[in-house]
Length: 252
Image 1 (cartoon, one colour):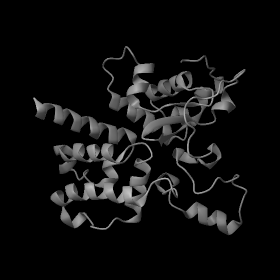
Image 2: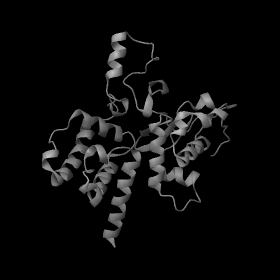
Image 3: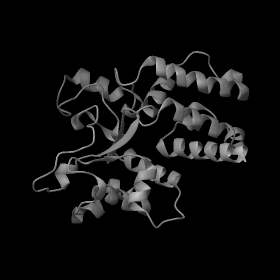
Image 4: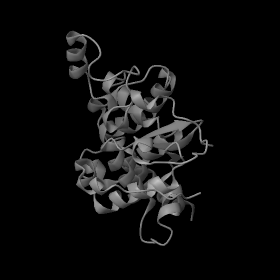
């Protein structure tokens, strides 16, 4: 159910908003309309396209997924998954929207508190209380830590699932360049897969890997590597669309 929302004048001067392309900027505004009073909405790009771009027949779902990815990259939203279904949380929603008699959300809450989310909408290891907490040594260590968008969250994704996804990619990678396909998973690859599993199932990631594998351009330019295939939501969706179309043609 769509809702009336407000846009503050300083919205247009915000640097994060300015970093978005016009399409993503409009899409972000549209998310406010379909988000409930807790700032939550279903996160499927196909669902969002149907709700906000019903007449844009020339717009691909993969384009919507890409725009959603750029919005999240600016730290404006956070995507999460509950029981295999994707959702989006609009960050700082209650700060910018004054809602009289708010309705309780019917969507599941994210497996984190908004205070535990940092730039790029990624989860931190703890809830945190602001930049002023902790000793100088701890703050220095936190600043030197890998980007939170690539950090595995304890108990969020099982190591078994991560290994399963990596094994799927390894089989494809060996055919391309065995020397660049290490048999054991390294920490950066594990973090990358864990991040992707927050918004996609293992089967969907496998589809993305196969989609990249059948792209001659991606293969010839070295973009078959895991860091490129699972780069962001938009990239994963694009590869999945390619694999789906390939499967459809093969069935004819």
